[in-house]
Image (cartoon, rainbow, N blue to C red; front, top):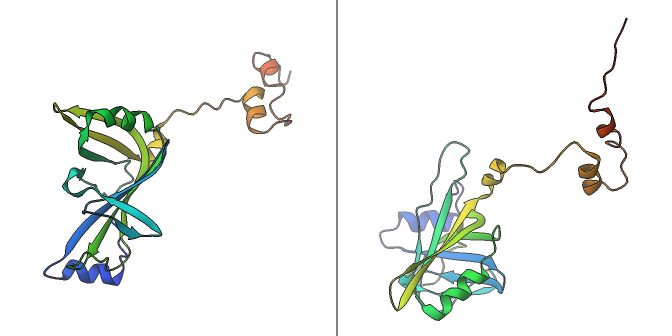
Length: 185
């Protein structure tokens, strides 16, 4: 979590009674989905967020001292079976998703702007079928996971042309790769 939280949020944490909410925003093929952990609509950040109540769940958001590619799973339970296929088809791998934590007054008014606790890229959606309804879970991975992916870059003219068309820097790489050069006498 952010170490430099807004003063109103810090004060809310120290208060005896505080309402904690979570907000989720994710990009899908059909557009951006914005839901929050309360009931009814919530207006924040120039957008209206749909209330999912207790149907919305989040896995633990880990914070470490090291540089670690951690993830989070967002789940929505009680999804009717006819909407499950839409949820899976709309998911795009590597689409961005963000989770915020916020604090509200007794009448559900935000005390300050929510704080980002996780931002990452969509990895895998999954379904847990429970008969009439399902739980759709979507895993998001930290953008640091990209450091573990293999790079498709090669020291060839073709790779260079894909990045910088017209560049002649690697033009003779294939012709000299097996060439024997006698150096000295």
